[in-house]
Image (cartoon, rainbow over all chains, first blue to last red):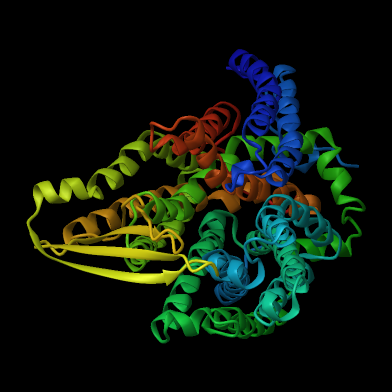
Length: 84
Length: 510
């Protein structure tokens, strides 16, 4: 199972940039100042890309942690989180 | 959790938390449901600034401000306490809703009107981002360990109940006045906004009487509260990786399933199937009414068998059945099929003339209403334009609208929407207990709020936008918009199945 977790980590790591590319390509293709629909509106694309880029980076970090086997065991209480 | 509260206390805790959360959802929904009227009043067409403000009010409030609110109020909740923080979010939410109902229209105060509405809308989004985490944490920290899922699932019903009450209030007001009276500048559309202040008053009164969460009080008396909850939540690797897991392995899928079941379905019935407004709304109301008890059921069940597989099963069945269900809506709403299988019992034709601009041109609106012996009906409308100068008529395309389903089909639709919302109850019922158990008490409010609001606000909120985006790219498939929730839920299912554990953490006081 740990092998699967680590292998899938690589996919999550690659999926992050893919999502960013997909959104930027979508913006370039659909932004149209003369258009009337939401998908033609540059402001909406700016908002969506601005909020999705950190999420995609989060997915990459998740993938990186998974590849490093950080999810082998999940912490069972706060002691394992070691805040002090 | 060691501390078991008496039955009376926990009932009051649930009532106080749920009522407040329900009101916040009510406030949020009435804005969405009255979007058309609000748009006419505050964001008139043809004004570029108003259009920009409208876009920001809709998109920024949901996508940026809501997660930001989760950070702001999550931090406050972990430093000051749960009770005072979610009291503040309630007042902000209710107050801004009430004030939206008092803002004069664009015709009266010009650009100040959309600016004020935008400001109030952003406050609403901010407050919404802080409410859920507080309510869920507050209830969970009062609940006995073996009934945490059951007790927190009551909060999960509030989004549905808020939607239900919002729909009910708007329909009640609409049924008691003409459309003109409802849509006037100071007309009936404002009543649901004003009604909000009454609900908030009651809820604030109840919440004021409540005690602080026992776990937080203990932590505070021991001087162990977090100094910097944001840093501990997101810079501390051991906790941050759990935040990421919560988002990608549970909440992201829950968000899209929830949004597709309760919002996309309604929009699909109104804009793709072209159902009559009242019928589409009553279909939603019946389905929600029948499905809501299942939030409690799945919360209760999650205490017995664990949270993980209930949520993931909800995602899996949604992934498999979304397309067949929505395809059924399209097929059974196709009037060509009605003509083939049913008997026409009569039709009426009317023509109305409306002025088009100030140039003397006019619109000729031809409406033909066709009725069937089964009780079904629809209206075919053609809008022609009459050019005053040349006296030429340019013929418009006929549009089929205001479809009324036959009673049998109507109840089948209710059954299918019920199934969609049943999926919502599976993924949503156990989620609060699941999130609470994932994080330690000192940073729980912050850590659970952010993934929850990214999952619901961003992933869920994007369902209609991505739907249109896909529809534009792949025009031949009317159901192509469903691939977004299917893909997100699929991804979440895999991550959840592989990385999450089904173990219930009995101790949440650490």
